[in-house]
Length: 107
Image (cartoon, rainbow, N blue to C red; front, side, top):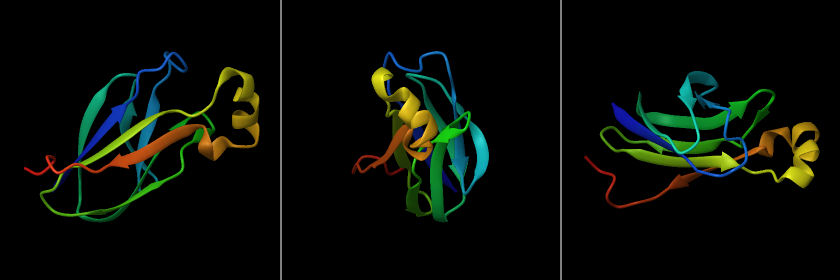
């Protein structure tokens, strides 16, 4: 089994809402602003993304190795002046998500 660590940025946008955490299009939990949560996932090719309402992030694709921790950070991608654009035309870019590579994440 592998640990998937999700860290959500602290920003003044979207403070009240939680993001749904999806692995291979299956919801495995939620995360709120400033929170760090850990999930156990099976090794193999995985697609991780986040959603809130009808909006989401682009998927982060991972090749998960047994016994290795993976770290992904996320946060709001929009700005107040462009929020309507993100909610209508750019729904799949409403949240940013990126894999963080670090040498200290091994068990």
